[in-house]
Image 1 (cartoon, rainbow, N blue to C red):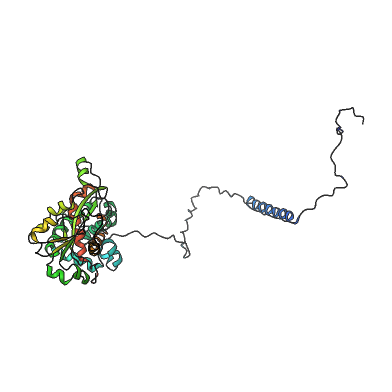
Image 2 (cartoon, rainbow, N blue to C red):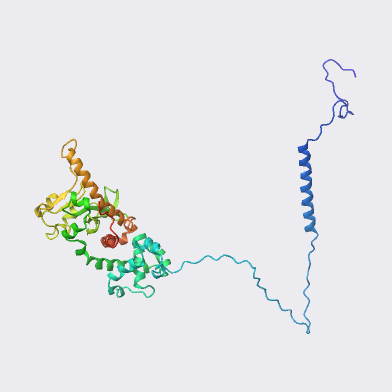
Length: 393
């Protein structure tokens, strides 16, 4: 083939690729061989399955008219086999009733705060026969179950619609029960208010040993507690109920306990902006028959009411104030620590009362008119429980 200068060499048109003699074909590896055999087996199985379904024939049964002599064929009844699989049924929650939990002390304690059924019935029996003759009556629930429903509302702050489902009543019924029983419980327990304020002789008999050595003349330990409420729509009400301490709308109540932890005083509920001093000025603590000369009150630093009780010769034992000093004297520090170690009992009692979640969660505006009675009931029920202050405290 003659090539001119600058011309590229090209293959002939009839030329085809071929394998050179010096290059031997590559042998198949063991791995690729196993893969090829596996794919062949799988394709064979699929082919067999397809053929198996292809051989099925559709059978068509023609409907023939019945002759006069022929009788219709009766269908054979379905035979129930013993080994027939039965689906699991989900149990439906039954109607709530205190009798149904008679042997379940744990559930009674969870829903009411009482130890067991007998403990619950002790409260019911104390209320007297008037519990069977209230203004609002309902034949669907016994008086015991009505009290049970009310305590669930106080203890767990359960919504009315949930209570209606648990007790199998209409949605409006729980609210009527709760209003009726809160008023009834308040007036019945209010009759025991004088018993809540024991004599100094009784207080000293049950006063913890260490408390008696350091503050033996203490008659009551005071502290304030606040209950959150829903924000009122009225601007003036918003301002009055706003608490600068809690940074929300609240109602404030003054609580007093004996040195051994029994609730002895419960004030009315006031708007959250009211000071502790203002509550005491309007309370029955300033009555002449409450204290005797020489007795003392233990309170927080914020309750500065020494002048209010000075006329009765009653000392208000509060932590010391700096009064322009850079720091307290060592004697004052030791004394303040002793006061704080004893005053903490009232905070523990208030914390125990907050297990009634209606005092912990926001109270609806519709229930605010009942706030004082709700607080009184929850703290009064603490006196039906065992004392939380140790005898050596």
